Length: 124
Length: 244
Image 1 (cartoon, rainbow over the protein chains, first blue to last red):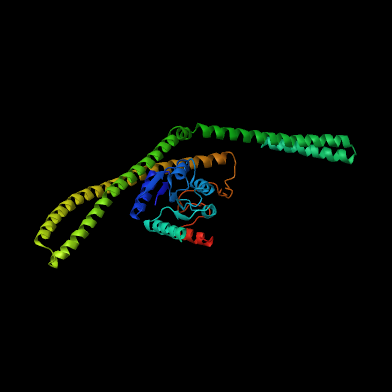
Image 2 (tube, chains in turn green, orange; image 1 turned 45 degrees about the vertical axis):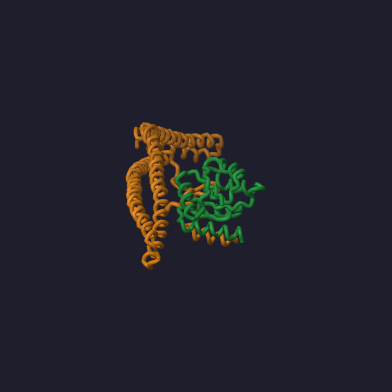
């Protein structure tokens, strides 16, 4: 299971990376915005994407749309982990094809729950 | 007052003349008198506009000459930006120190847990008299090594926890810096209110319509940020209502 973590704050990337490692996902890579993440996704054979929304360069929602528009990546499960909590934004993300949405600040339990839910659905 | 009664006197005379002209059917003369009356009114208006213009001019000049305003724009606000950037870097450093300590500690705890589990299994065998003399010698060496490692790891864990403790010093420092910036924002607010008053604008705020394209960031208690969810449960409810 290869996971890409996209967030402009390195500390948040480290926190997510550590939480994922605790959950048994040790194969993770990091990118600091959508512009860096997209080429990594296109060539890196990732199985899962965890992305922030608000980032300089390319935002998480644009990255999600780019992923869904790319024939090779369209089926990639995407979890949005973000401080953006307006209802219309959550709906926007849902319509863009997000698989899960976690609002910051979040707990390890929430992250675990959302990730396992996504895999249940993807595998089932 | 003298001037006022003089004007009144002139107007009264003109009015009488107007009535007289109208009664006599002298329309041209009547028009001329009406013109004169209007002129008096216009002169008063011009004087009033002139006075207001002068007052506005003086008020704006006074505002611009207020040394606090220029100090704020030239010194305090650039300072505040520096201060807030420093807050970002301090909180980042603190988070990094804490994360490093945690990343170093977790594998040590995991190793201790794993070894303790293995030794416990051996120890249980020994208590059930299932260990040979040689096996026991091996267990004894492993126990000694484990106790030494426990001590080393405990020292490292102590050090890491102290680092986590010390990394919290940002709270005090950033708190002081942010409080200063809040004071400045308050000052700027007062000056802006004054400026709005001078220019005669009404202090009515049109209802702020939130632009859906603007990212609001974290929810802050007490700040109107539009239709936001307040917890992960709300997010889950919203998503499940959309068929997730």
